[in-house]
Image 1: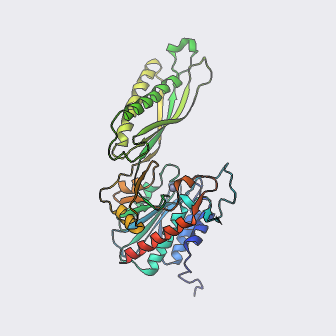
Image 2: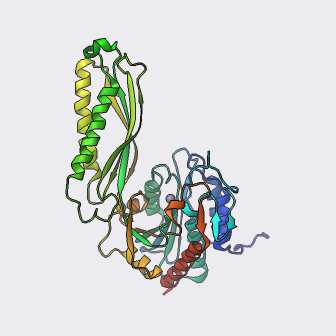
Length: 393
Ligand SMILES: [Zn+2]
């Protein structure tokens, strides 16, 4: 006879938050200790969770289903990874939740282990109280490094659980519904030139000067975009148009040598209603044009691209179920859009009605002394209470 009871005592949201924050699940490191704990905790409550591993099995997403084994669940979606604390000046240990003056300090309290804790709590309560409509949680990894963990997790969920209908992505939004965000993608661009003495310029290829043509293309495209009328779907964004940006550049060895190397990173933040791939294909055409000029001088010259992230926009839905559900639960009428990417666009792309609603303010995310207001955490718990009532009705 095992001494271990099947069901251990359920934890409060705050107790769950304390446990989650204690795992330093920075994106560059494994999240498995956190996933092990959540899986064990849920198992102790009689809930079977499922993992989706990354390729080298150093990280896993975790998802679970409670309620009738049927389609149509409400999915509570959060990420388990957090940004690093390196070089940040923290007043208290970032991996311990410390309450001071109505605030819960700790890395990830705001972005977004506060919501994760509430989602885990709600799933356990759904199991204890019983629900007529199923509830699922989906906890991803690698969100902070380009939202790369969610798409394989969402695909894996389809094969294991009945498909959910509505996804609530709990990124910090002050518990207001956010129904749209920009999409985006980025490229590491490596321009390979050919070195000659600069006095012999026409027989060499300067990677810097050729790379500059592509950067100038981005400048001209920004100007062209901003000369167009703002579309109604983009009007709520700040700025209300797509932007292209180069944030890093390096290359060259001397003022009188044509540069053999130039590397820069180009990102595009694309408003809903525009195709990211249309911007990408125009960029690729320009790359091909510049590369052909380079190769005409030196065949060994060229341009190599590596796409390092891609996040679809969250398109505001007409009569969307996610937005309607969140409005009912919060009683709020305000609807906003945000300019940062989230996993909401990925759930929407996979066929879910999706919107963002979570405790906290994005201004506190990623900062030293990151905090979540206790009042926000409590508002999040009230949201979950109402959700449980609705799912049971
Ligand atoms: Zn986040």
